[in-house]
Amino acid sequence: MTPPRFLALAFAATLVCVTAAARADESTGEATSRTVRGIVELFTSQGCAECPRADAVLSRLAERPDFVALAYHVDYWDYIGWEDPLGTRRNTERQKGYAKALHLGGLTTPQAIVNGAKVTSGANEAAIVKAVDAAPLPGADGVPMVEMRLVGDMLRLRAEAPVANGARPPALILATYAKSSSTDVARGENEGRRLLNTHAVRDWRAVGVLDAEGRISVDMPFGLLSDPDAKAGGCIALLQAMDKNDRPGRILAAAELTF
Image (cartoon, rainbow, N blue to C red; front, side, top):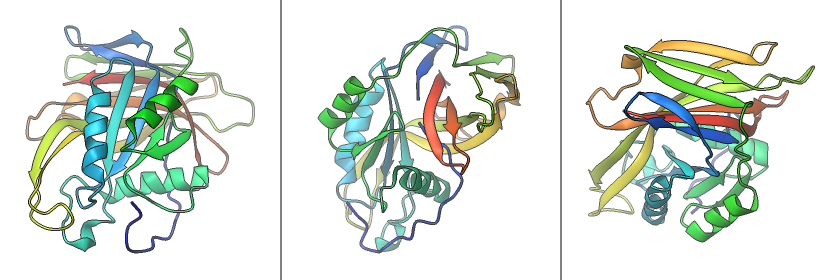
């Protein structure tokens, strides 16, 4: 659904897309290599009447071992009567970055970006799966690669990928999410409904770029990532290509840890 108010596409330097991914071994706190065929990034809002169906689709996809699913709640529906407690301007900026890079011409919800390249309705599960089947992530061993592991109270990230001469080096993006949340909506298009949201992004940030040799290592206190309310969640590290205009490119590798 296109929001009732026109939104100018002011580009913000954001990063997006995917290749091989890893999921966590919950017994060791390490993200071990595992093939992931699809990354689904859903742009959604509790103020959008069509979004709950897409939220349900994302919840099902998040259960699949070959998919990584993230829900970015945007803030441009807030004015219509309900302020989405999960929405942020940062998430809207990420969607604007996709719109600029993929020449979409506007912002819509629910919108799914599949593997950083294919755009479809977030409510169309068949189209999402078809897009992944048509162009799955390579899942190759070796590089590009991303690893995450917990060592004491520190999170250690490591990534590698070839860097072409004269090209922008890939960036390492870290996103944290809440496993699930329930909200009673009091106003707006979903007034009176209790909405269940899965893998809602709490924060995302660039933590660095690969060096000239195509490597990056980052350590950070795990306490900066865990939910302040001690709710279950996780984090996903994405290694993403960037062009000379800071537009998002294909994600080269990914890893996921739950906590």
